[in-house]
Length: 177
Image 1 (cartoon, one colour):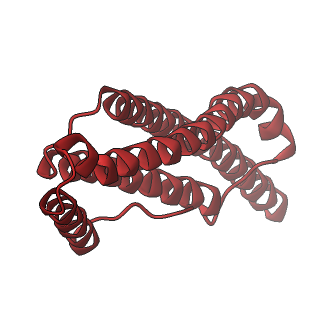
Image 2: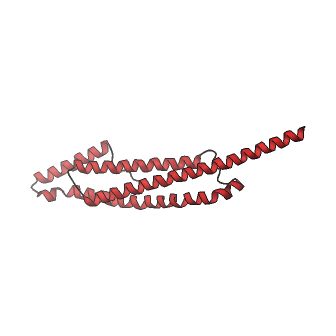
Image 3: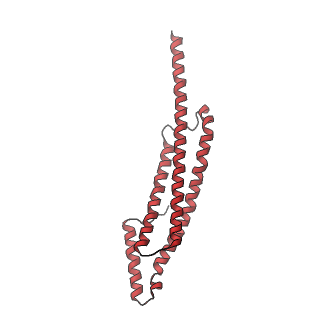
C-alpha cells in the first residue's frame, strides 16, 4: 500500500509546493497558473483516495460477509470443534488490519491539514476524504464484530471441551472406585 506523506514529509512537500508557487508567481505567471502545482497535487491525491476507497470497500465487504458466516457456522463448528482460534492469530490479524486502517484514516486527516496549510480548498478532495474515513470506520466496526464473534465461538467451544473433560474425569473417578 502506498504511503501518504505525514509529519516531516508533508512539511517538506508543503514547503516545496509553496516555493514552486512563489517561483512561478515571481516569474510573472498569473496567480491561477502559479497555483497549478497545488491543483495537480490535489488531483493526484484524489486519484490515490479513489484507489484506497475501492480497496477499503473490498476489505469492508469481506469483513461484512465473514462475520455473519462465523455466527452461522458457529453452532455447527462447536459440534466439530472447527474454527478454534486458541493462539488468537485470527483476532491478532484482524486487529493489525484495524490498526492499519486507523493509520490510513490519520494519514487522510494529515492530507487535509496539508492542503489547508497550502491555502487550497477542494470540495472533491474533501468528499473523497469523508468517503474514505466513513469506509474505514465502517470496516473497523465490522472487524470488531467479527472479533467478538470469534471470541464467543471460542468461549463456547472451550466451555464444551471443559464440560466433556469434567464428565470424563468424573466417569474415571467413579470407575476407579
